[in-house]
Image (cartoon, rainbow, N blue to C red; front, side, top):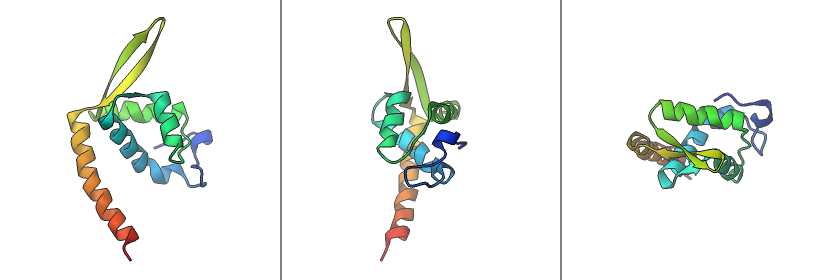
Length: 112
């Protein structure tokens, strides 16, 4: 994932390139739980230490949509609109597969 200059570092100073897969998993996780819009997700990911700009997040959302993991719809609110993202069945299946791999990796990382 290409990070913008303002979003190239997480709170701890690590490169977001290292965490790109985790960010995509966060996106799928939230999309599977409930529909969301981009600004909400930027704020939610900030709680996890990711500082993403719209220029970093929206290309990822569009890529996941193009790949069939997300779908979006434009909801009109007066003169403006808001694009809402949801997980597709393919996205839910990918997330379920990833959970097993993440569980295995974390088990190795934190075993005593």
